[in-house]
Amino acid sequence: MTCSRIFDEEDTMNTRLGVLAVLTLFFFCSTSLTAQTLVAGEWEGFIALPGMNLGIAVHFGGTNDSLQATIDIPMQMAKGLPLRNVRAALPSVHFELPAGPGLALFDGTAAGDSIAGDFRQGSVSARFSLRRTGAPKAEADVPPPPYREEEVVIANGDVKLAGTLSTPKAGGPFPAAILLTGSGPQNRDEEIFGFKPFKILADHLTRNGFAVLRCDDRGVGGSSGDMKTSTTADFSRDALAMHAFLQTRREVKRSMIGLIGHSEGAEVAAMTAAVSKDVAFVVLLAGPAIPGDSTILSQIEILGRMGGESDSNITHGLQMQRMVFATVRAQKGWDQLREMLMTEMRRSLDRMPSEQKAGIQNPDSMIAARVDLQMNALRTPWFAFFISHDPAADLAKIRCPVFALFGELDKQVSPALNVQPMSAALSKSGNHDVQVVTISGVNHLFQKAVTGSPAEYAGLEKKFSDGLLEQVSTWLKKRFQ
Image 1 (cartoon, one colour):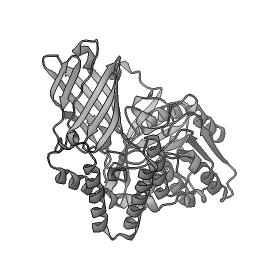
Image 2 (cartoon, rainbow, N blue to C red; image 1 turned 120 degrees about the vertical axis):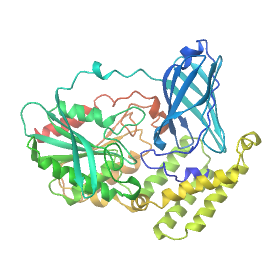
Image 3 (cartoon, rainbow, N blue to C red; image 1 turned 135 degrees about the vertical axis):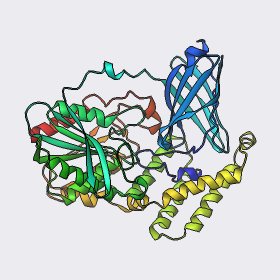
C-alpha cells in the first residue's frame, strides 16, 4: 500500500481522495464511429485506484481538424483546464494536460457511450472509466418550480453563508429543514459527479409542504470563510446560525425547524441538536456513530480489500495510519512522520516497472511535492478534530425525534460498524422517537448501486434510489404537518 493511501488533502470520509495532483493524459481508443462522433460532447468518469477514486470530466469541441478539449477534476477543485495536442485519429484519441513531473497514461477501448481501460502514472496503476453524458437542459426549457426560491445570506460572526431558501407558495407558516453537507468543500446542492442530492431533496420536501434552507460551505460559491482552518464544531455553529435565521422568517414555524445532515453533515446535525433544545428533529443520512479515526481505518480496510490489496499491504497501511494519528494527537514528531512518508514513497517508486520510471522527469521533486501535500493536510485543524471526535457522545444527548438511514452497500460509513453504535447511543437519552433504517442495495449517496464502491459514483444514475425521498418526507409529515 503506497503512502498516498494513508491521507492527502483530498482524503475524507466523503471521498476527497485525490491521488493525482498533476496529470498528463493520453487516450488510445478503438471504435467503428467517426472520430468526431466518438469524442464530441461531455464525458464523465473516474480513475478507480485501490481503495480510492478520482473523478474527471472531459469536454470535447471543435472539429476533427482542430479538436479542442478541457478537463475538470472536481475533487481537486480544478475546472476547465485546457488540454493540448488533442487528436482523434481512429482508432486512437490523444490529449495531454501539461502539469508538472510524471506522466499519466490512459489506454482504453470505446464501446458505444463508454470508454474503459488501464491507467498508469508513476507508481500508480488502476482502471479508468468514462461515460458520455446527456446535454443539460437550457434554463429556458426548465419550468419554474411550484414554490418560491430566495437567495439569502446568513452571518455567523465574520463568516457569511450564501444559500437558497425554498418555501411553498400557499399557506404557512411551514415546518423547515436545514440541509448540512458532508466532508470537503461542497456547494449548496452537495454536488458530486453531476449528482445534486440536496437540490433534489430540497425540491421534494418543498413540494411536500416544508421550507428548506441549504447553503454553500465556507469558502465555496457565495460563502466566505476557509474550510482548511475550520472544524466540525465550526460547521455546527454555522448550523446554529442558519437555525436562528429561520426563526426570524414569518414563513417558518419557529418550533418546527430541524436538521438533515449527510455523512459528516450528520455529525454536524447531531452536535447541533445536542446543544440546542430548539432543534425540532434530526434526519441522519449515512451518519457515523464511531470516532473519526475508526471511520478512516475502516475505509482503508474495506476499500483496500475491494481493490484487491493483499492482507500484508492492508495491515501495513493500517499501521502507518495509526502512526499518523499518534503524531497528529501529540502535535509533535512531524519531521519523523515526514521522513516515514518519504521512505514509503521511495520504496513505492523503486517497485515501479522501468517503463513507468522513465516517465518521471524528477523523482525526488515528485516525492517531495506529494509528501508536502499530505503533511499540509494532516496539520489542518479539521483533521485533528475529526479523528478525535466521537459522535456517539452527541447522539446520546439528543431528545428530539431522530430518523437515521444507512445504505446497505455504503463503503464509507459502513452500516455493519455504525448501526448498532448509533442505536445504542440514541437510546441513552431516553428518546423514544427514534428510527434507524438500513436501505438495501444503495451506496453512501443513497443511489442504487452494484458494489457500493466510490469508484461507481460517477457512472450511476444521478438520482436517489426509488422510495428514499418518500421515506424521509413521510417520516417528517407524520410528526410535523
